[in-house]
Length: 75
Image (tube, rainbow, N blue to C red; front, side, top):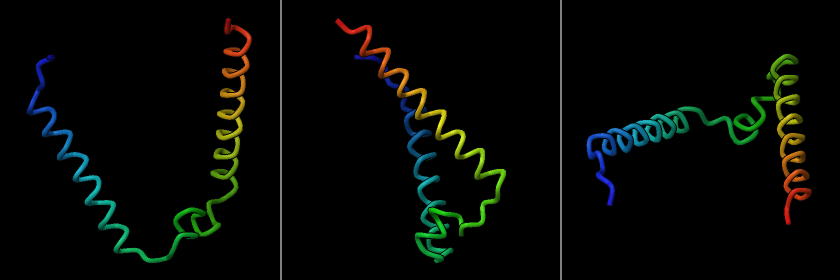
């Protein structure tokens, strides 16, 4: 079995616990609801909306190309 760096594992666990704690603290602090969290209050702006849309479209096309290529090269 590989040697495990205990200090490193403890540091990673503490880091994730810290992130979880900050997330729970922030969730309790703001109570706008699900729409506010998921849609940014419908006020993210044209520039951010455009970047988000083009990023999602590019990711969809990249995965479609990868799937098609794997289909063509499979035996």
